[in-house]
Image (cartoon, rainbow, N blue to C red):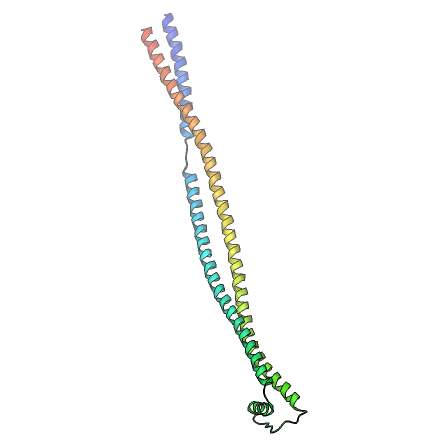
Amino acid sequence: MRNLVISGKFIIIAVAIIVAVGILYTLFERSGYDDSKFKTRLDSLKLAAEQLQLSILKKDSTIAVMNAVDMQLLDRYSNKQSEIIVEREKTETAVEEVQQLNNSALVSNLNKRYPGDTISNLLPVAEPVILNTAVDLVRYDGAKKEIVLKDSTILILEGRVQIKDKMIDVYKEKETDYKNLVTNKDTQIDGWEKEYEKLKSENKKLFLKNKLHKMANYVLLGGAAVLLIAK
């Protein structure tokens, strides 16, 4: 009779332990690890990162094209500067040639330039004035050509400035893309760190769950042994 009472109490205790273990086991089962939200979020971040990297590559291509155009404008600018120097040298050469003209040659030069106002002979007093006028006219011709070249140079420089302004805007956009990419990567790292902590916690739960499972098995085995002994 005493054995039956002891075995009955043991069975009650064993059942209570098994029920408690079962409840805890069920709780752990319900709070299982779910990474679907994390994967969805990670996929979204990866897609955004790829789009940012593609945007950066496109901007690099745009900057490369702008640099090529700027180099072409720089070559044109250098050529115009060389043309201006050559034109100045031509003007100085022409001035020297005029200054070497004698009386008759100077008259012939002016008559060719102004055929409507013919000059036959120069008075000695008028010769220096006519000579200075001829020199001024040569410099005037050279200045007109130089002005045309400088106008072209100004247009080239304006084009370079516009290219540089656009390039600065693209660089600013590229900088924004890089900042967003860094933020994206930081978010991914933060997500992985949090996910690691979740997995770490889940691993502890699984470890305890395994312990509870073994405990329940031991209780069942003990109860079975007691029942066999009680018989």
